[in-house]
Length: 146
Image 1: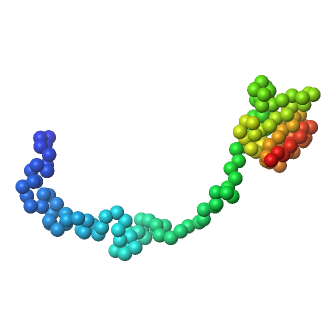
Image 2: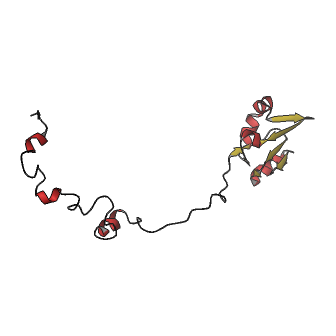
């Protein structure tokens, strides 16, 4: 059967309004407090079971000055997009030598995934060991800039 009126309308006349003993509905005393109240006292067992790492400090936070974030680019991307880089003046060609400054693209580290087909000079603040090996193996130069 569908209820036509809300149940609360029916319960308004009663003393406890469907809440059992009237003492139970006063404030949050019956619950032992609101929110995290008593977590270190009378709700200790609940804390130990359900949220054991609630109290205390864990680990450490590095100072933001010491954190270095690297935005990296792979050699295969440079090799595949070489024509676009030359057209957009990110890479330059001087005396049949290709020079690419990775910082112009918004990157600050070169990784060694993939292979190069052309010898070129790549300028970047950081290089991985593999990237330097592959660049120098084909006859290019890995130039570190500040």
